[in-house]
Amino acid sequence: MAKFIFVTGGVTSSLGKGILAASLAKLLQARGLKVTIQKFDPYINIDPGTMNPYEHGECYVTEDGAETDLDLGHYERFLNTPTSQANNVTTGKVYQEVIRKERKGDYLGKTVQVIPHITDEIKRRMLLLGENNKFDIILTEIGGTVGDIESLPFVEAIRQLRWQLDPKDYLVLHLTLVPYLSAAKELKTKPTQHSVKELQSYGVQPHILICRTEYPLGEERRKKIAEFCNVDHRSVIEALDADSIYDVPLNLKNEHLDDIVLDKLGYTNLPEPNMDDWMDFLEHHKHPKEEVHIGLVGKYVELKDAYISIYESFIHAASKNDCKVKIHRIQSEKLTDKNVEKHLHILDGIFVAPGFGNRGIEGKISAIRYAREKKVPFFGVCLGMQCATIEFARNVLGIQDATSREFNEHTENAVIDLMSEQQKVKNKGGTMRLGAYPCHLKKDTLAEKAYKAADITERHRHRYEFNNAYLEKFAAAGMMATGIHPDKNLVEIIELQDHPWFVGVQFHPEYKSTILRPHPLFVDFVAATLAYKNRMGK
Image (cartoon, rainbow, N blue to C red; front, side):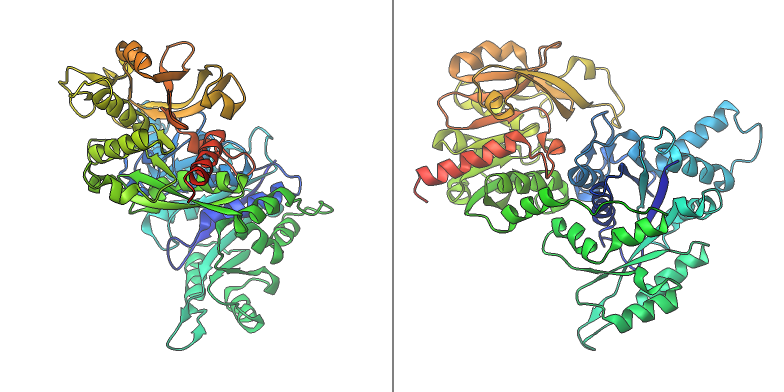
């Protein structure tokens, strides 16, 4: 039977429950345990797939095609193991299943209520990953903040599980805030006390408190928190603000969080965590030898979480190249052919981000034209690849009205067209081409050199694709399809001849980059920007 750790949060949102869960999981994994993490989100959407990135940040996609919360990206990047549909549950999914059972008659005419029917479904899903003996420990992060009405059924499910699981198989961690009042020049423990009191009022007593703070707590405050919150003194853990999320596992290790957790779960004689690879990554991350400037051209640049996997992929690739990548966030709506030089001339590389809809498209196309004509390294993902196709068709092939069917339903030159399997799709949620698909790489191409393999799989999230009716025209003019879906003949990768590094991909490589396995395309793109910088004598 797996052991279960539940992570809740109090006082305020955005304290970092996902990073806490991922960091603890990494420490436990480094001690030889098989660990996974699941996220329970209180919103009624079935998944975040239909949400605007400004609303909820990035929508992360798993190997099996689930559109999930962005925290699953942190889980995968820290643990270096894939997650699945079972790792992200929303209130919407829970209610959908309960209503399905009610319509089917599974409740035998009973009145369907939050307790026990909703909470029973939540508990079933909380325990699901532990049924196949695949994992030793399952961490469950509860979204939202204790006291939110939306989160109450999840907290109640945790309370009930306390009496279903063996005490050695059940642990609750509560992440809270100890704010610093500059006027009083001191840390205040009262918000933490109230947060724990709120949790206790629902019948849940946390075993360990993780106290997010700007300044050291000191022993007196630790004792005070322990006494008023009914936990033992050593279980009050200081979580100082860190320079990087990748410092958090080591900071928590210094606080002996993994030792305390293992002791409470009944583990003995486990080896110390082996974090050598992690520390090697951090060494290169914190002490780079060079710096490059890369422009991220996108529609949602105002919110970092909208492209979080891309930012983290650049961090991984930079460490691999022993350099620092300075990202310049460029709003594509503000770019035109007239001002593109002003915005992009300082860059060593141009990355055009994914997205949906026609807002900001012309700015992306201007940026791509600049990269193509000035021989600046270019990397386009999903919509970025499609925009590169449109730019080439307009400015090289001379098809002035070339565009995507997404932007103009009645165009006569849809160089990007709706996938045949998508033409009868009406519902928006969960209906795109999602998850991992195979791709065959042509020999002696930038992609094949990066992957060092002929056949790969990558994760997708799109409805539109390269229109193969234009394939020969593109090839004759120097834009090659270098990655192809072997069964459906879909164009997955394009490359530009007579250019030092110009690659567009239909898939999302950022979903597969981890600390220990930086994505090869990001690694080679950063290497190309370094070469460009040195070539230009910057």
